[in-house]
Amino acid sequence: MTYSDYRTIKITTEGGAAWLTLDHPPLNILDAELMLELDDFAAKVAKDETIDVIVFQSADPDFFIVHGDMNFAIAPEAFLALQLGEPGTEHLNPMMRLHERIRALPQVTIGKLAGLARGGGAELFSALDMRFAAKGKAGLGQMEALVGIIPGAGGTAYLPQLVGRARALEIITGARMVDADLAEHYGWINRALPAEELDGFVDDLARDIASRAPGMVRAAKRAVNAAVPSLDVALDANNRLLGETFGVPRAVELARAALAAGAQTREGERRLEVLLAAL
Image 1 (cartoon, helix red, strand yellow):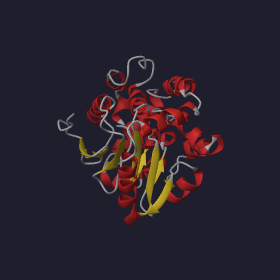
Image 2 (image 1 turned 120 degrees about the vertical axis):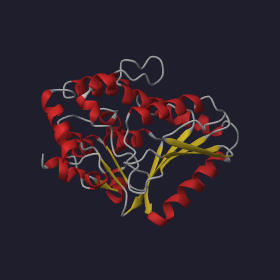
Image 3 (image 1 turned 60 degrees about the vertical axis):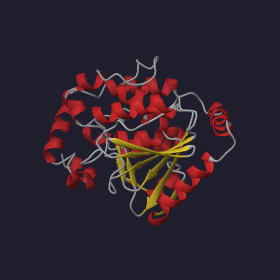
Image 4 (image 1 turned 90 degrees about the vertical axis):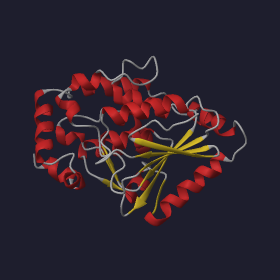
């Protein structure tokens, strides 16, 4: 199977491992184009029995995925019209459907975070099976509270399982950036590694996983998944409660003000929480 027809992502393979590199300048914004290509890749690779492990990484040293496109809040009808995900998930919003398709892959998925991931980018990162981040450089954040909404792409379902209820509420309502060391302490990531060791560690781990006996990796993922409570109810609640904040006048007003103040520009994204808090 070939994966060469994408504009926003690049796919390389080696043995039973694949590397998906997010490459959507200028900022790796999770917009319709990136979402559609990620969804198409996930649909194809799910049927690829030659791949057992997938590493998600970024070509941008500063940003993994900055967050979902803030224009979705201004024009929610365009967002809701996106056709993504597996059949049977149509009751969820498109970003949730994408993240659930990725989370449900039979392959083990590994996130490599060298820079920042906020909002929908942090939620996609949370949907992966394992997560590793660079000390002193990487950061995760759910900043949605600063623009009047809740995380809407599965964050309220994923985070409590990863970090616990109290810390999930801290992350979501506090809307502060979480650095790699704290993310490791909280359980949001597997390990915080020195930046110069991140690539080598994750790539070696992926190659090790890909070398296992045929069928072993997929069986291990199914067995571990069986021990984790279903997220269906949590995702339904996340989607329903997002609807109570997404698209209301204040949220639209804040989204417009954020874009006018420099959100979704490189300089603005470096200090996004400060920028949003000043609105």
